[in-house]
Image 1 (cartoon, helix red, strand yellow):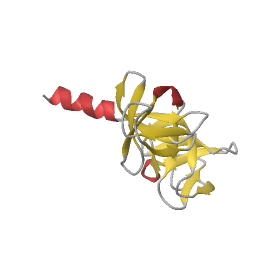
Image 2: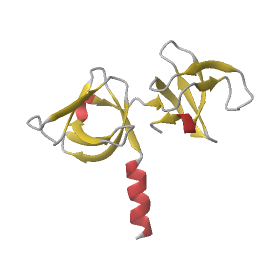
Image 3: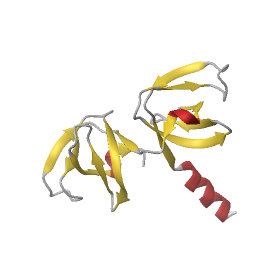
Image 4: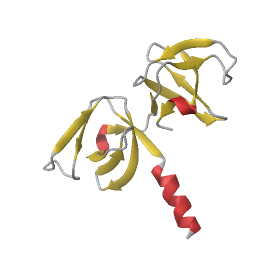
Length: 138
């Protein structure tokens, strides 16, 4: 039973990023389903379930919906979830702040989270480290 719970948690932490075009999210795994909303390109989504060519996803607010798997990319991104999140030169609170990211900013994930820090890149090319508690999508 414990093994099943661990595998369920591991599956729940699978993230993909909306690809080159915005993704339409539906209430059912079908183009005939009701369109719920559109998610901008680059946005991270948590993959909850895969059903054929459809994926059930969860967004940062916890809402779940369906989208076509072909619209998602394995390239990873994270979403800043706190106001004025600091991106630093090193994975250390005492290191220099490179820039401050507003809530809702999408950053490219460069390296997996280590010791409460994740290496990211801003769309303008600046690379640094951000606290895991300030982002969603890891």
